[in-house]
Amino acid sequence: MSAATEQTRQIKILAFDVFGTVVDWHGSIAREIDTMALGIDGNRFALAWRAGYVPAMQKVMSGELGWTRIDELHRMILDQLLAQFQITHLTEVQKQHLNHVWHRLDPWPDTVKGLQRLKTAYTICTLSNGNLGLLSNLSKHAGLPWDCILSAEIFHKYKPAPEAYLGVAQIFDVVPEQVMLVAAHQSDLDAARHCGLQTAYIERPLEYGASHSKDISVHPDNTYHARDILQLADLLGC
Amino acid sequence: MSAATEQTRQIKILAFDVFGTVVDWHGSIAREIDTMALGIDGNRFALAWRAGYVPAMQKVMSGELGWTRIDELHRMILDQLLAQFQITHLTEVQKQHLNHVWHRLDPWPDTVKGLQRLKTAYTICTLSNGNLGLLSNLSKHAGLPWDCILSAEIFHKYKPAPEAYLGVAQIFDVVPEQVMLVAAHQSDLDAARHCGLQTAYIERPLEYGASHSKDISVHPDNTYHARDILQLADLLGC
Image (cartoon, one colour):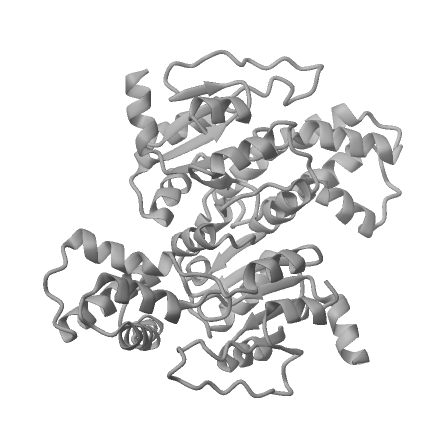
């Protein structure tokens, strides 16, 4: 604990992954799809939409696509899914509205209160692959009290590119060890740690819905492991 | 009024200039200098520091300097001023602290309440030449409830370059007419208007201190003219 206490003292910036870590993309999208009564299963549709996310970003990272925002990648995946699920009657306005469900995701129950507590002692920001407009609308919808919204859009590099993690330290004029990435995904935390950031894992066992189990075991390389953001505030003494 | 009402209906984003418009740079810096008891006049020092700002940015805009953040431009001007005012005893740590007075500027009395009211009906963001770290620290210090912090640092173009104004519309995926720049400087508003943004002038007669008068006359080209941010909220029906 003394090593952790020493590390805690120097942390100045908490940078949060967003999708899955602070908001419940699966539940929010599944509920909206079910409400639309399209005759398709919201759970399956949400999982399929999210499954297209990494391959779409990889097209940008490989150079196959030029810089493309997540809003546009989400729309490309949506159009494929609507064809695959044989949904052919939506108007263009309805498709745009559905694509913006990613701007209307609900927070986990602990998120807002946890962020408010952490904000009293740290600068709290996003570090998400979501674009700035999406993150701003989402944060307004969910009442997320960020000090600053940072996005891959600023760096024109998607996580896990080092430029995204190191960019947070550069923006706040601190060394990487003074930034801690908070995320529900070990791969994101691994990439941040390789850049010298500290890392906090948040469990979110229901990220993919009740029908999918998620490995939430402790990885000793992380600086902190917390059940949720309120427990992270406890661990950081906020 | 009906034309203004029509325009008001379509405004979605209020983008605020920061130095002078939402925070009182002159009073905050003059007070800090006077408190330091360096034997120099806080009013004169604040005015001289700010007077170096536009010429320093012009060196970046002309290409004489590569992209340089305002924090560094402020430090370059500070070093010149300390020599000019014959202040030779400050340590490096003291100089860094003084340079960060720009991160500790106080809001005008109407600012926080005015922004809170406007935030209920619009997305409110900064559009400042200040760098993201400076704006984040300043907003945390002053309690400014932005939905998003935007800066010339994102576009690598200082206002009045069109890329900065048009960049706000691009980020939020709206047309320029759906963005209104709110500023206490006609030159900033003129440049925004040329890009198709709507404009709101805020008077701030004491921006340069009580010893300097400022022209706060009405320019008919602006969409709105308000005494302060609370009156702007009145005019917008928030």
